[in-house]
Amino acid sequence: MSGRQPGSAAPVLGLAGPKAQKTVSLALQGGGAHGAFTWGVLDAVLEDGRLAIEALTGTSAGAMNAVVLVEGWLEGGADGARAQLEAFWRAVSVDGKYGGSERSLLDTMLGAWGHNGTPPGMIFFEMFSKVASPYDVNPLNINPLRGVIADLIDFEKVRACHAVKLFIAATNVRTGKIALFERDELTADHLMASACLPMVFQAVEIKGEAYWDGGFMGNPALFPLFYQAHCDDILLVQINPLQRRELPTRAREIQDRLNEITFNASLLRELRAIDFVNRLVDSGKLPRAEYKRVLMHRIDGGPPLAELTSSSRMNADWSFLLRLRDMGRAAGKRWLKRNYDAVGKTETIDLREAFS
View 1 (tube, rainbow, N blue to C red):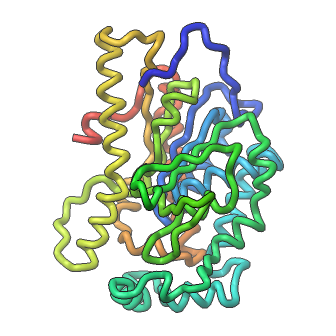
View 2 (spheres, rainbow, N blue to C red):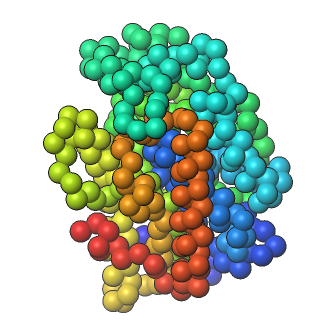
View 3 (spheres, rainbow, N blue to C red):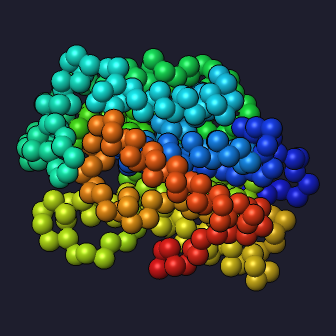
């Protein structure tokens, strides 16, 4: 990953509180409601205060978390970021502030959630989506997230913030390639594009191009951190499990596993590339002065998060989101306790084990 120039200027520390001692870039995966786990991780990192954040890359729910964090930080530092993240997840919950036709639309499509299993409304909607598109069932293109984002985020302020780098991924429908949006161009449309599930919502059009969820091509996109972030440490918050021991045999289980594999594919390719370049740098075949030797870290939910079905990514019940937040906080605190000393010195994830 060429991207380091000899004699380059010292980096801007980005979002840094008074206790910040080390700098990282954050890579935030998408995964619907499971993004509340990432909220918890971020809450723990912000509360701890020892890590400065130079750059963030995110997709779908990860993109939402990234932009909300930055906007909140601009309002009130780490405490402002923590408060804004909570306000966002509260707003998008079933018990949140949006309602009326927008809430009714999702209730009609997905049905009411219980504490276990898949809602019958969602099963019906998935069957119906095989023969009808969102252009048929949602001709007005109602998306309740748009109102929440527009109310909560001052995009003009985010675009004007030069202290941190932001990268939001979407998928270009026509070319099939990843589209990467940066901080100085972000609008609500770019966030909607990053989170646009093609069987639920119409493609988001921006300047004549149509976009779907970024998870198809970059979940999250790591490569901008190779070239545009100065620090070597990348902390990945991963919410889609890579491995499952059980063989899926039911139709719902098969579809869930296919979704997980699809939304992890691009990440695995990038982890493999990082490992390949790191080995060349370590062996002296590539010069450290010109190639970034990435120090990769990861926080994931482990078995508790992996035990949740992929379908539960559509569960917006507030108690469920709080449960995920608490899981994320625990994972974040655990990672900081075990691995903080390694930041800036060595990676804390075995990349070859992760992708092989």
